[in-house]
Length: 471
Image (tube, rainbow, N blue to C red; front, side, top):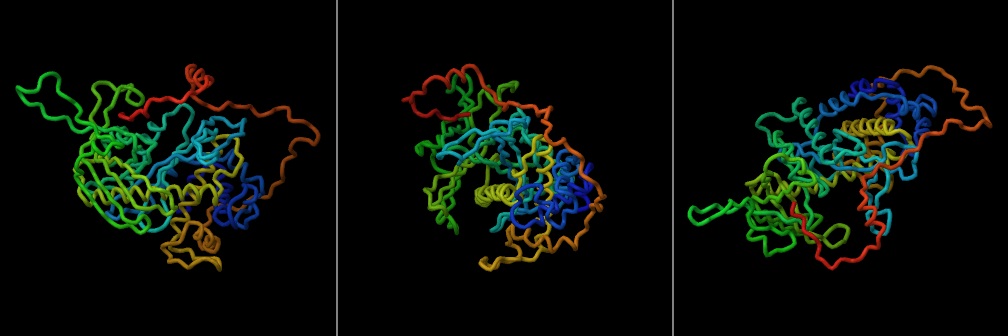
């Protein structure tokens, strides 16, 4: 597999591949690209890393096909479970970096959501069951200025599912692939766009949503006027509108204590010709699904637990399918551990790269490195610290597998060639100023005159109730 990853690097391949090996074999977290040259696996100079990222080339299409061809984890029922989320590479002070977008961040202020310039990336991973934090990254796409996140995600999932089918991970008669996403995604919209694929969508919905029940049947001679398209309201915040659930499950979990799961079948949002559906021709569809409410007694952090509302794009679910659905959503949080591993240990957001193309190359290099860690889970030896508890081999974390990868690397093939002797360039003469400063780029944002005027005016607290989300 290392040979195939090497073939995906088409320009400055040796420097790029040794850079990925240095990430895997370095001691401790990656602090800078130049520091990686101190690792024994990096046989080139300290400037070759940044030069390879700036002028290298990665065959992304071939790399995506290679990632889809490796062994993938499965859920308890044998199906593929994919999780998608957006994480940001924040560059607030990088005025010479192009294509920066305002990214949603949380925790940088006093419990407030903030907008910080950066490069947002949409990452799709395959989830697996078990008490660990492993995922299988399969695709990465950087959101360019002006692109719609929902459209990019739909196109990304469609291309990925096509590659998985071509690789033989799904065949006719297998369970549908399950796509799990958080509340930032429009689940009904994704289900409608991906309706021709063998994929079901499971998303979390906000607690202020309002869905509709099926329209009542028209009685001949009694009902007059135009037939109704929507039935009664199902208000998440009003228990009086819920009615009797179709499925009720009571169970006990290890981390959350007693859990109560209730499901209501055939609920759909009332769509309107605006936002994502503004360009839809003809009558808007009725996208029915199953609403699942998960309620637990406690949280491991000690915070007050809030109910979780889920929307499944399939109707007529059985007790077993509902039970597997909410457990699959809890596994979605493993993608957050993958983000933490990429950022804090492998140093994804550490390099101060100027061009977004170089950032894309560094991102794909870390995906290659993380995939090699996952494939080496059964080969690496646990080199635990004296204060760490011993763990079974199948429960070792990615950081502990990386700790023993240096001893494993001599047994693996190294396709990178020996570096040629060279001398550094003369550079700019000392004392001569830079007469070609880098161009500066503004942060790409979409604003309107009305929004600018409203932001300048003094905000007053409204006495109207919080609007309900019906779409």
